[in-house]
Length: 172
Image (tube, rainbow, N blue to C red):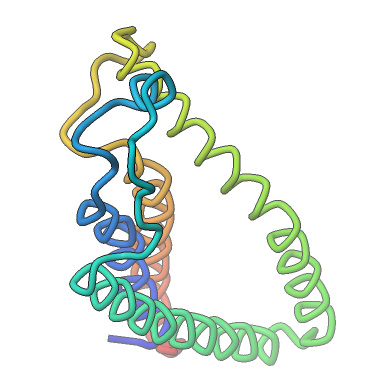
């Protein structure tokens, strides 16, 4: 499997599993946020992850770093191959760096908005209200923003697989 697709596949898996350690954390005996606000717990809750959750989180972070390195390297190889063919490597690199800067600027804002939406959704479900699209679903709401990132990685995996089928010489 080419480097870029390998990174995208690993990235999708890690993004989907990233909130998994949060399931190990005790948030106050099953009380909702509204109940905890009215009746705070008598003992402070630990902000540290239990050892099993910490080990899982560290393993996920290591695989995430490997996936990012593979995807970025594969993308740079593809850009350089395409640039040599088109004869405009400088222009292609300039546009690539501009888009990368745009992503660095908009990425945190989009991530914050996604997380805020997940928190809003969770508060609506716990307060007994029904969010616009139905009930709470199969997974806790903290998975929603991470599953959105995983979906983007799956699209990248599919898209580059389709490009490789059309042009097998660009197998980076």
